[in-house]
Length: 125
Image (tube, rainbow, N blue to C red):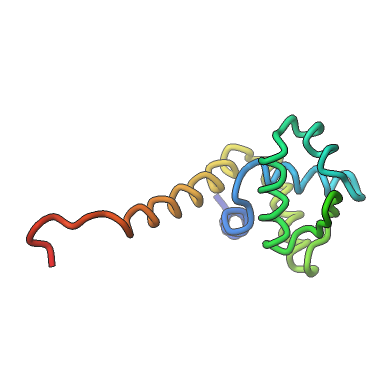
């Protein structure tokens, strides 16, 4: 994989908590306007909970703006917008690599959290 692809995969892994979140962002981006939560639920065939969590994570990542019922594709700056363009292109060309990057990032976070609570064997000090 090219260095540019690696940088894009790092952006994807850091910015998207789930593949749903990426799909939701691209739906907003391609739509070119505001979408209501109910429209996103129907469009993505997702639950309200999945859409709400994805919207929250996208707001936190600086990718969208969101009020109570309407979400708008609105990257925080040009650099983020350019990274989204690259992410969209890579997702189109290598969807499995993008999905793996998202899943692996979330799995490593869960593993690190679990490791923090792992009990030591007797004698480990």
